[in-house]
Image (cartoon, rainbow, N blue to C red; front, side):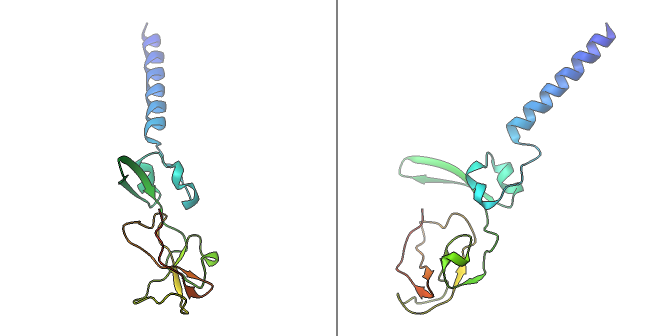
Length: 130
């Protein structure tokens, strides 16, 4: 009788561990910025250096992970030199003037703020990234 209880206890423990593993993703998977859309929880996002945030587009409320680009802050002349976009970070941008940019820091470049890009060493028109 005692051995049946022990076996049942072990089975219950294994089932609980498996349930926890699948619910919270423990231990968290290691992800790259290219896998930002595969992040399942705030726990997993933060464990990978990201920021979990909620945002709303009209009536559609969303939660997602914002992971950093590995080359954030590097100087660039064009987005082809970055993992993400090459952004103009100076003051008083003049479209079509020569400029150096900086590789974007995060996957989501907020649509709340508008950004100028640097392409082919020149400032491009203001655009909003969603």
